[in-house]
Image (cartoon, rainbow, N blue to C red; front, side):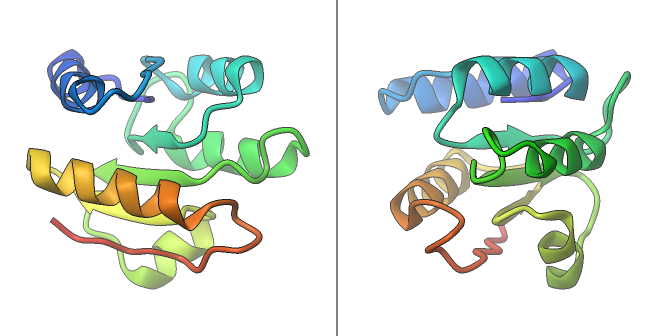
Length: 127
């Protein structure tokens, strides 16, 4: 999970950990990129508006690296994005903040069930 807002990061981590997901947390894109390369997560939860390196740049760098290129990414942002913007970003899903616990669970389950980028269509869930 890459999210600069500590309150959101902690709340979403609690939701996911209650569902028995292991959550690794980063506060900006640079740290998130480093952790993704080290831990190779099954999914990246990614805020877009962050200091140091924003979510769009982190996602571009993830996609350029063969070891992280196929990790599904779920954007979670206060920005309103079109399906085209989500698709062009390289993400597989999108939630607009604020998000409910149900939306978090549903989006994460859907992306993990879809498997790798190679075999999954884009999923653009909304709250």
